[in-house]
Image (cartoon, rainbow, N blue to C red; front, side, top):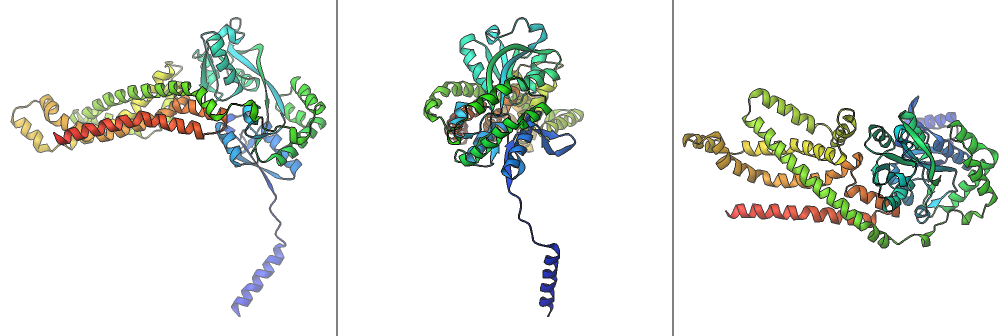
Length: 494
């Protein structure tokens, strides 16, 4: 009887609630909130929400499709690869139109046109007006962008030095500090950079022109065509203009773009189709990028060797102080080791390069060397300390009995045995440091992983770039591991 009663209660409850409505379909759109306003940023009033003109365009598209927009956070450099995988319906985050993207993805019609402009210090405004004026100078930008491509082309023509950053904030702060001589980015970012740094100005000349588009999976052309219709209608009825006016981005370039698109409107199936014939093959691109990868690998290797040498020297001093030093010194060194080991290497690099910039402006390579060296010195010191304390105390007592000084005991008895015990973990640390050197790209050092990511972003695939990068890392790390094993075997035979 009880089961019947329970069933009746459930039925009554369901009738009281009423029919369960089907969940509304979603438009999953992706962007990078780290890019900030006016593209996509966390709403200061409610950090769980995002705002920006791309957020409003996603809402416009979702409304036209009868869907509910749902934001997915994806790093900017990963948007193309995630779109190709079909991880979301559309990507919107100030994404630039390019033949390379059209060759591998389905792109919407452009919805905004921008100009690439140079930003310089006010004192240099009369000197640096074009890329030709910056011959031999350092010019900052973001990797895998139209601005980066323009700088790479200008490097061969004018001899300037492109400096790539991971974000659009630090290029302008470094320009204000004098670390770079100019910044080349689109005018949306340039205006924001000048507003944050009053000592900067934008040059009047336009270096290049680009357009923002949405990206979809290559097979998702039907949805792309529907979105194109929605964008076209929004251009006609002024809804896109209203969005850009709200974000103070409307200018005379947009009416010309919209009029051109409407006047030259073509069938949907012909808009944004891949242009594979205009792009070099993957292996051809690999051959073109290979010299740059080799140069980046050399930077990685030199940086890793120098950083490991610094780490070994500092680690040896710290370990000696903790084993042989007075009690206050031991406490201070222990606190330092725990501080370094307990904080992320990425944070330490940021503090060294950006945080201390107002006090001392370290060159990027030197800051990377010091950051890696100090970080790994803490780990090396623990290896050396453990190896020193692993030597049996009886051997040390015997050395004192025989009249050995502390220095002689260390040089002849304790040190050689400790080094043998420490060799294997030291080798492991060097391989780890070699890989951790990829983090220094955040302070503008273009090492192997950063150059590989630029390569992958430009061809739209990680398969070949990733394989080349892995092969280069193995080519650098395996000889060291083999050398360490040979030394260990020699000692065992001895």
